[in-house]
Image (cartoon, rainbow, N blue to C red; front, side, top):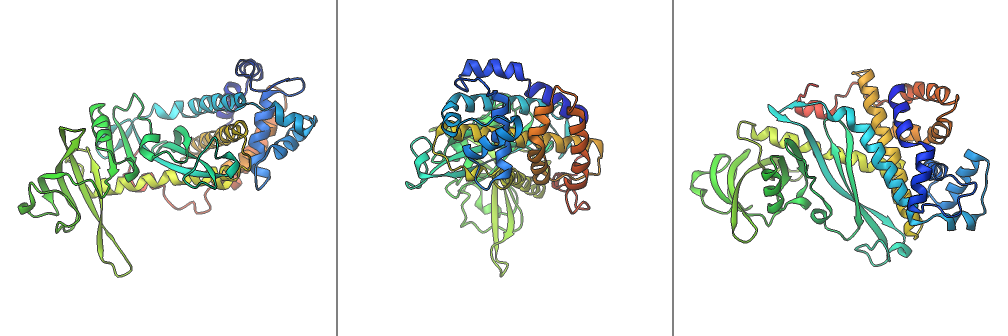
Length: 417
């Protein structure tokens, strides 16, 4: 863990390199006593010490870290949109460093050679009305943005994050990466688009995506759950199905093309009386994978919700009071930096003690509490003592309070690393 943290800080928070990059991006005007690394750290740290992260809180944190207290108006005016760009650069660098080692592992799950299993979802963050000019929301009285995150389920690490305004539809907010071969994508029905099915399939990737009600493909082959008399009919909710449904169905892609994909229906309790209902999933996973297993794997999509919970409850991403787009961008980037480093620490804890179950929420909170001292001490003799002080706290307070509970990904997949 010490090696991982030392390497990450050496890569991400190299002060001279960041100073040069800040000047290129015009991240901070009239630098003088203000170093861009210290300003970013103050923004990250302010997420943990105040109910509503703000420029005023960041200014106080800067004073606690450096002993320098700029005038409030001066500090505010020196923050430009370039600071958000600088923060995003740091976030991407941290993301790359934190996940490089884990991505090299080949997952053995489901009897498929999948390179990774990724859960994709979006979450809307509310902003005050004065931010609506730059970050419009569906509510005219509020601003807001949407963060679309891709989480590696097997590695429990953030793979990518994309920011749009809150009005953006889930499907349009998602960008399919170029390299998705042998990657299994898990998505909710907000991403149910027949063209997306085809794009993933053409790129030799896999998907399990919940179908919308309006998707009514034509049944071509029946393996279970539907009588043979319904071959050639539209697969709609009125058909008399039973048990686990497993069929091949023809989907319209574009105006004229038709593509065949697998559709799995998993029975669930609809209400307290136990009346049955079905969750309908489109997938291109091969037939040898049991239909029930397809439904079980889809449940892993909920792991991305833990990520959003950490961003909002610990990072307080939904408590930004500012209407200034430069400040909003900077706080988004700063919070994501803390999250990615926390995920890297969790991965290092699991590697060091395979039976350990670290809590992302607890590790994130501990990191934020010590973040300024670690980054400020980097490059000095105080860095190792600061690390040595943090690590016992991680083992003592950063683990799941219910350590006997197995990992969700291991319980559902039976995967072996």
